[in-house]
Amino acid sequence: MHFVIMGCGRVGSTLALTVEHRGHSVAVVDQDADAFRRLGASFNGRRITGVGFDHDTLVEAGIHQADAFAAVSSGDNSNILAARVAREKFDVETVVARIYDPGRAEVYQRLGIPTIATVRWTADQVLRRLVPEGALSEFRDASGHVVMVEAPVHEAWIGRPLHTLEAAAGVRVAYVTRLGQGVVPVRGMVHQEGDLVHVVVAEERTAAATAVLAAAPEEGA
Image (cartoon, rainbow, N blue to C red; front, side, top):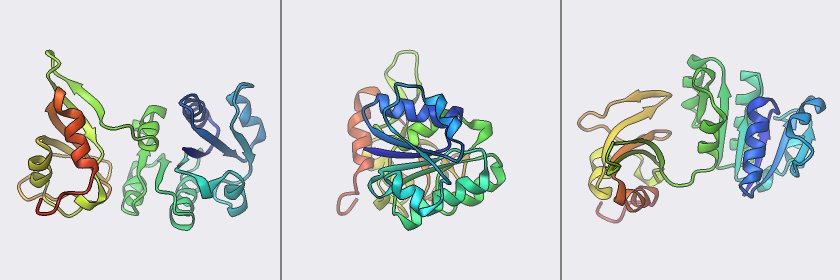
């Protein structure tokens, strides 16, 4: 996989080094060439000096081949503009933007771009959005038999009631993160675009259950 990261501050450099360590290719874009010192001499990815929402800069960074794009500079406007360019002009499937203002983050979430407000910010949270590797474990009971995970859900489930997801996968939806806010499911609630679904499931069924949700629903489901 190829990743393009805009911003080489603490978070951007951490993301770049982690992604490369996992065996992926990565290009980092920053207006300040001195910022690349955070990457260290061992970093083998591309260092691109330029504006992260500039067409030529993104092309140089390999945006046409990018599987994911993260905008993690220090400016809200730059981050959301770059994220929209990556999503709407270059059709990058996975895009994440860091937004300092939680209120604005909610607005941008409606555009279909996952945003993480700084108050909840860690490099690990962004990495989880960029490199989905199955369910993300959030809780495990004392016996280890029950876990709560954030389960990737295929877009074909959008518009379907949450209870149909539960029935198909054999899980219980504990809560949904919608527009940056946790929401406890109520009767008739449907899965919406951008929702992050957190489910409770028996530990031994985690892989099978999340595989069901990660795929399109079967006919008649």
